[in-house]
Image (cartoon, rainbow, N blue to C red; front, side, top):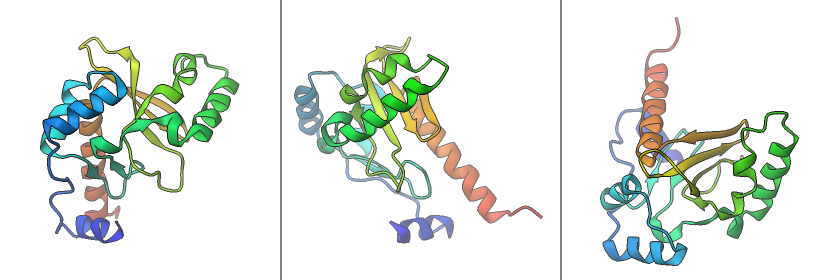
Amino acid sequence: MPQVAIAATAGHATWFGMPPATQEQITSAEQRWGVTLPSTYTAFLRVSNGFLMPGQSTSSILPVELIAHLGDDHADVARFYRETLDSWPDEVDDYVQNRLEGTIQLSGPPNHRPEFVLLDQQEKTPKGEMEVVKLAHEGTEHIDSFEQFMELQLFSVNYGLRLYREPWR
């Protein structure tokens, strides 16, 4: 991973994706979780079954065969966020904190911080997509689609590269 980040900042790396997922892999995941995965996410999987995001708080998007409920591998993290969000005076995130274990974890191992990209199966956006929830140390960010999430990641990477190449004078 460090080599990928170095190649990216030097302008040598141009693709951080993986080989595409097969329809069988996508269907198997949908059957395993009993859901129809969002169209923007499955379109992404047909191009790249996973993705590295060097230099970002989200280190990677997992291959579809590795996605899992947050509570399966990270029940302690879900409990931590439930307790943390419960202590906040704002009740905006109440509807998420009670369902964290059942959200589908799309992101890879956190970078020394419990930050995750999740699909909330119970919250549909106006376009009919599952809402993407980015769970980070500063709270939750709610994003209307996987496509919008990836656009935000691309903007962040491009902004970071621009700062790296053109430091403040």
